[in-house]
Image 1 (cartoon, rainbow, N blue to C red):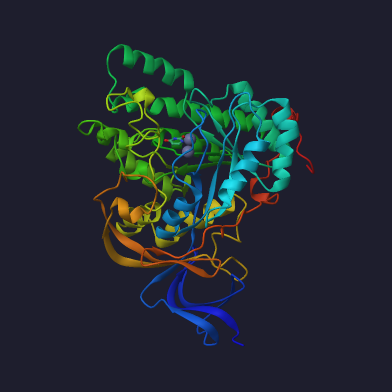
Image 2: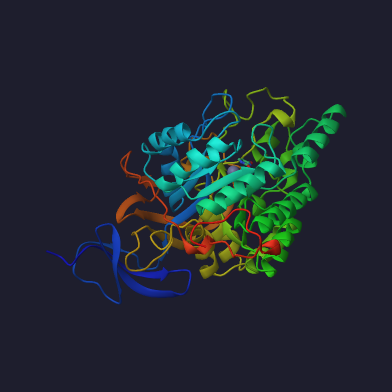
Length: 484
Ligand code: DUC
Ligand code: ZN
Ligand code: ZN
C-alpha cells in the first residue's frame, strides 16, 4: 500500500507566511506531509509552474437565505458550491436569518437541512434582529453548543436593524457565550431620513442609492459599534468597510488595543458609484450596501489592507439576479432605489480579483493575499488551522493557481445561479486551475466534479483569539464571561 493516498507535486506552496517549492502528501482528506519529494503515493497531481494555495475561506456569504417576505435567496448551497470551487474557495461562513417576532432555533435547523445539500464546507453566523430574553438566554446557548460561534447584527435595514439597547444586549450575550459579533455599520435613521428626502425630490434612480448612504453614515455607525463593544469588552468584526474614514475608526480603536477587526470586499476595491449611474436600469447591478465609492477610495482601502487595519477580504456574495421575480427588477425597471434588493454576487470572482488587482498589480504580496483570503478569516472565525492553512494535520483544501493566466471575466465563468456578474468584461491575471476539498479534486479547468451533499458542517469550539481583553470601565463587569 502506498504511503499517501495522493501527492501534489512540484508546486510553489504559499502558506501566507512564506513560499517554498515542495510536495504535499495527503491521506484521509488531510495534509499528512510536506516534503521536498514525495514518491510513494497512490495518485499524483503535477503542479509544476503553479502556485499551491490554501482553499479560500469566504467568511461572509449569503446563500439560500430565507427572506422576510417568504422568498429565498436564489443562490442555493449547490450552485454556491460550484461557484466557490470554480473560484478557488472551499469553505464559507454564511447566515441564518432571524426576523422580528421570531426565534432562531427552527431557522438554524432549517438552514442545516438546506446546507446539507451542497458541496462546500460551511459554518454559520446567526443573525440577531430581535434580541429577546428567550432568544439570548434559551435559544442562543443551544446554537453555541452546536458550534455556532459568531453573530451578525445590523445597524441599518428596516427589518433587521438593532437599536443601541438591542446591540448592547447582543454584545453582552456574546461575551457570556464566547461568540464573535460581526456588525453591519450604517446609521439607520440617517439613511431613512436621507432616502425620504431624495425620493421626495424625485431622485429615485439606482445612483441615488449611494447618495442615501454617504461615507459619514458608515463612519458614524462604525464609531458607535466600536465604542459600545469597547464598553462591553466584546470583540467585534466590522463587515464590508467601504471607505477609509470608517477604517480610520477601526485603526484608532486597534491602536488602543481594542479587539476589533475590519473586513472589506472586492466590490469596494473595484466598483464605483459611477457604475450605479450606468444607462437604463443597469446601475442596479452594482447596488450593494455600503455603496461602492470611487477610485481614490479604492487606493485608500488598499493602504488600510497593507497596514493590517482591514485583514479579511470576503465576497458578501448576495444572490439577486437582474431579471426574475426575486431579482433586482422585481418592482419594475423604474423602481426607486429604495425598493431594489441590495447586494452583488462575488463568490467565484473574489480570489481572481484580489490576486489580479492586489498581487499582479503589486499592491500586496502573495503572503498578504493568502492571509486575507484564507488564513485570517479562518483564524478569526475559529476554523484555523483545520481550514485556511497548509500544514500537517490541516484539511487538504488546496487551490492550484496559475499566476500568469489572463482571463476575461464572464458570467458563465462564475458558475453561480445569478444571471449577471458586476465584473463582466474585466480582465484578470491569475486563475484557479484546480480545487481540492479535503483531498478530493472538486474542480479542474472549470469543471466541477463534487457530488451534492458532500459538504461538511464546521462546528466551532471556544477559541482564544476572540477572548475578551478584560478591560472594563471602572472594573465593573456587566456581562461576565464564564472562566474569566
Ligand atoms: N449588504 C448587506 O449588508 N448584505 C447583503 C448585501 C449587501 O449589499
Ligand atoms: Zn451587511
Ligand atoms: Zn452581507
